[in-house]
Image 1: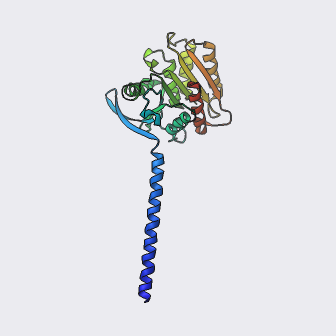
Image 2: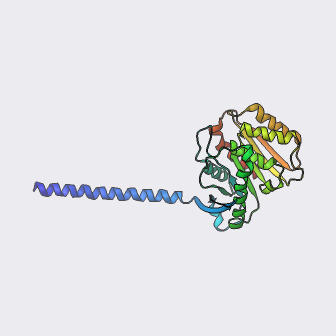
Image 3: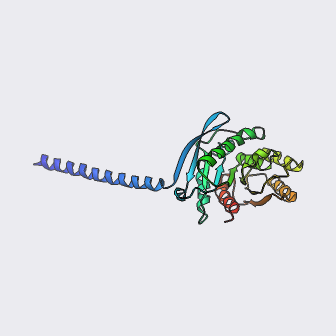
Length: 263
């Protein structure tokens, strides 16, 4: 009798355990379905003979509307700060904060371990130029392209704007936060020596920096841009006095996107 009771109890425990396990699986499935509503595709493109992998965020409206602007995030591994792995998501969050607005968000699939420097600007820029050519042909009918980044990568963004070579004009809008001091010096030199192309098409720049950056140098860059009074450039700058490099980018990305798209 005891054996039968004992067997019955064990059977009940096993059955209950199976029911509990099944319920947990259902919860996990629902969570994945919620996450999958954010549609991100991967793709491959060629850059200077090298096959490169990228990723693209497609908003829900993309199913019926291909005329959507594109935001390109340049994101490399941090060389002097803690690595941020969520910059792509923070750009998407910045887009979602604008009611009634959608954008495609594009970046490299992985975060390359690259220390961006003025000497290698063309090499790094060409990857995104070739990526943009691929996205234009495969994903969107909208010619609006925005280039966004922070740290050394934001310096590549600024070089793409101020570089004299007309080939760097494929981007219309630029969002740069906390540029590298060594890059800022190169950009200051371009402006001070009047080495900026005069016939650029209309551009917009949102520039910001945090408490971690060189305040004197950043303000010098801001003032030089203002004094230059470039007819082709709309410009806004923000100094974040209560936030450092590792915490500013979610705020500055959202503010930059809002400014660029007049929202």
